[in-house]
Image (cartoon, rainbow, N blue to C red):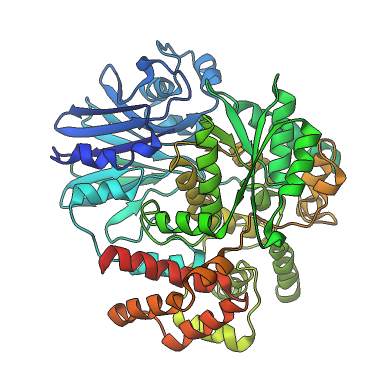
Length: 580
């Protein structure tokens, strides 16, 4: 896991730009000038700890800077008869490129963003993994091309702060993060998940190489469970490829608990597990459940208990890291947990992200399924004349269900007056249930979950790996019949498997999510300053209806519409630090 920076000109402050992302890779830092272009890399050494695996890496006329891990790199060497001289997964990407040019991306099983500079072609070839686990931002204007793992490095090279991108801002208020290829700044874009980019010095082209394959197979329940279990074991096994210690996040929920349990069975020693809890507002604390799992799998268990002071201290440092407004409050306890793991000398952690979206873990999926059954006759989505009507109905219902709260008609109308509509991605010829999972991959996973897990862990030089987001497992679940997946409970298939490895009280406990008393602590700490900060910023920009802001403030005080208020406050706090 690493950080990358590059540009197509000789920038005098390039070393300062790469210094800003040293937290992503403190083990080595290098800059290479090639054909008047600059390529920089900060390395977190995990696979092949030798100096020969440092980057930028050059073989023949190909240079690469790479952020991520290719879990199946050993298999790729054998399958494609690659001649390698190092033991690193980085060289495998170069050798595949030399053999197949741009067509090798679908061979990779891993998380990655990288840039290959081809001295023969004089072009940049950049790519991002299927689900957006690793970030790739870029700027291209007036023939100036800059890219980096984090926006702060691009801003340093630009030496000015661009204006806000209004489309990105709307995306943030709807989904807690800018979506599509937008960043919060005009002209700074993000390469979408499953895409690659080619820049030849004059033209920049972006192409899609991957989209989720959605199909229907004829597996019965027993066959489906066997295939899922087999693939999940292999997914965890691949993510244990490391020359350093691997730990796990363990919340006590079924997802992280199953990851930890499978890891413990694959390991020849006791594994390290880490959990976080709270010294007040105990209803958010899951340490007791994590302790049950730890005892069951016999792990070396570590608990971190945080207070309001810890939370606020981390919150105040949040804006130096996120490069723009980001509304998932779970990033803060994840940062605190990552800091502890880093202090213990561990560089890699397994996490349970992605399970809810492929196994139907949210109650909202079932609410929406009921909605579809009551409102639409057709089972499948097609490009029909009534799609626009369906899209708008889906958008209104789905987005507000996704907040976990229910609006009255009047509140919904008030909310909609403040934000314009966005187009939703859809997948041709699939069921409503699979379509909802597809939405979540395109919006929630790519833009929120992966941003949270990457920034929070890499802030403290920790690499997070997500076994549920192995593309083979994802596509298997997208091929299983809806009736098998729904069963009689959410995560029906996963729970059937988990019962073999976990106590029943863990498998069937009520879902909590990775929650914290974030709004309680913010109100305790800042009180009315929360509202005054927003109104102060709004006097400069006039983005918000002040009556609406005051309404959300009073509602958040009573633990309602917490996320809506939090997003507005996060934006105001970020804007004040960035522009005022």
